[in-house]
Image (cartoon, rainbow, N blue to C red; front, side):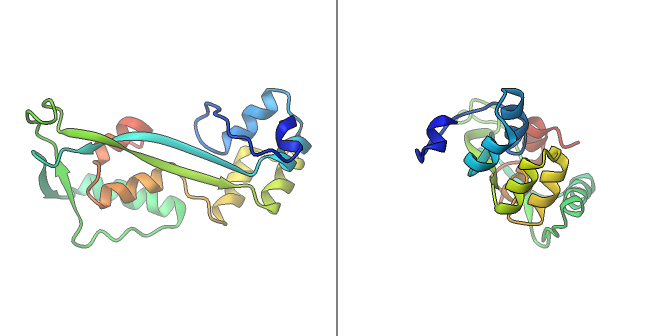
Length: 168
């Protein structure tokens, strides 16, 4: 924090559930609200999810449960996902993917930009829920939204997303 306060660009890792909880963790580490609000510029959260194997995956339509889950998540965050013509995959397993149905990994991300409004909330000791509500009105998109977009692009599956984020 001292290096950041003197104008140095500092990258660090802090293990938290999402990018907003970094603020809570810094507070628990004894960093003052003023120091967090004046120093923190951006917080990024990521998870790695497995990509469907291009050799053995089988394209299929989304089932009703999957459509319901995607719509429910979209409604929660005010996003309408276009499911028209979208397909997902059933993973089978082959020699190439060691019979897992997945080959390789890709990141899903969320980025919290610490804007002036977020800085004020931090300085006022706002809760993480209040900060999240304000961030959602700006550019912040939770991990689950990036994950759903990668499911809709056919990169990963909703089951893999659930394995990493416990969405259902």
